[in-house]
Image (tube, rainbow, N blue to C red; front, top):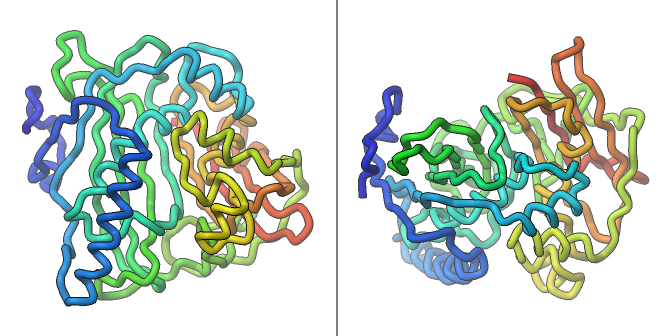
Length: 344
């Protein structure tokens, strides 16, 4: 289905080719994970037979008129340490929009297995705040298949627009935009230069370097090893951390819920959600982030639960340049995540 408002000026050619599918509501993450697990199994079998999709589906999923629930927002703010407000934190907007992006990855023609995807990084841009009671339209699609030394990466893009007065899709302004980068380890779909990931530590167990005070992005070029700076805080995360974040995010991946369920999937203990740690760092920046900002994170070695994370959140550069943050294992110094929050 094509949005009634048409394609906005400035859209790229790939966007013009995407079929726009309007979903009746925000899908259930639990059902999507079940569907994705089944699709992943079929994909593995197809690959063994030399078949299976190799291109991303040219489709964008849209859910119109999404609104936050006050109790849900309050629970999120309380867990993450956000100030009580009717403004939705950028991490909470991610929670609202994430199922729509996941629905794209759970499609039977998605070329990478949803089961086992590793979350490498997130780039979020908030142009204007979204407030409790405001309706938003969520649109998500996949782009940018790329070679990686251990597999293939893909970007899932999500746009959140304030619903226009006529409730026409894509009528209102973009309030929030997120780009999540995932890695399918062991799946090689793209030939060519895999690039230099700098040995980057990525989510869910792929190790390397990078970080605050000598960190680098996901681009090319060698990066110095992470040297733990002076911490500004320490997070003591108990064994129930993953279950509590699952309750507010809807992301009940078994690797986060208990030692038993995590061990069944190859982890020694449950691990914290990456977006929980990133959102907690954002909450530490607080009101200093302003109304319009960019928020980036690169994930590293997973945080095993229970665990102690040393954290530094500090101004980066001249006044007004924003903040950089990092979290690392309090004893070993192994980096868990690095990122920044910068005004637009």
